[in-house]
Length: 509
Image 1 (spheres, rainbow, N blue to C red):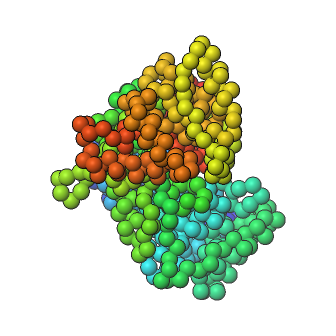
Image 2 (image 1 turned 45 degrees about the vertical axis):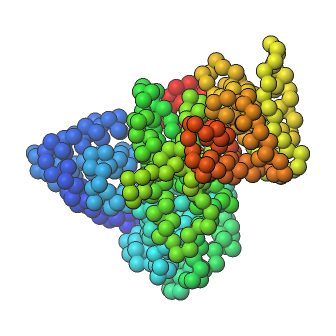
């Protein structure tokens, strides 16, 4: 009864604070705005949400909050609806945290919730904001066994990080990530009394959920405390950008992205999705890159390497020269992405066709051994049985890359059929020239890149080839292989979410 009573008190407070936050939203100060909210919510939740309260604003909002609290995903739908109606609402961050707290409380109920909240709200792991965030990200990675490495940018406190993890599933034979996180936090702080209370609460939860046999796994996971002069900073940086065509409107894409600041484990955090018209994609990508640059620039010791860009695109977009999309600057001038960033492509179809993932992972392992025997196979159509013969030849484990015989065109063309055979064999690297795969310029440039180098270095060598083209006054009048060489480079260990619209195994969604 104590746990239930404590949870109920906290739930009532959360509902009150949710209502307070909604009252701060400009769009909800009119009856029309509140009515619009219920219409958006009803659509999002696939369940009717109505206004009650005889036009009294707060009463109406209380009913909306109660409706959302009573439905699975209701509060997430409420936050998303406010984000749609008033994208820059100051209350959005508070609403997001309150939504997280509501679900955290239900996942980890305790009559000590108020005390836990007060404690975590006041805890700081470092006097430096950048160091604090870097350490929180590291502890989240440990707590999830590196299934999630990056916190949302708004989650920069111990309390917010705890809420972020509270609903996450536990790994096999492990404690829930939020419990591991609290134990790691206890190891980081100098206050013995608070550390003891946090560990006692973890033990209480473990007993409540009959998980005490898993407590020993937590020991030894804690990360060493960082020195204030040497914060744990990001090293390898990847921005994975997925462009998923909306089935009902081919001129619109669902733009998704993941950011990873640690090359050792893949567990990048999925940022918010946004439907974007085709004409606006270039500008939206520039904004994504800008946000990563701003955040990394706030670190005392920024990463030394470049921000690597990976575009996950459908077959029909593979020949789009995204590496030459523009970045803005302080002046009216723009520069191509390729100046600052290694850019590779990834296949939306391969990512979702799970039947070929086993072969893909096996061939990637062959690639990363960096054996001198690793090589590319060049497509050369010949005879009616070409694709059967191709599938047979590609079974050679030493083949880790494929050169298309023609640029990607429609799905009835040779390039698609060649790529399908390469996907089937798990070939992680596919290269082509966007204009003419048989040109002497393309073939010679490819030979030079491989001469004395490894297939593993291809993304970096192609990035440098593009910069060389730009140094030589990039122009359609000057022939240079760097202006049209493209590479599909796919690490199966960096696999973003499967997305919403289409799965080749199941048809349109």
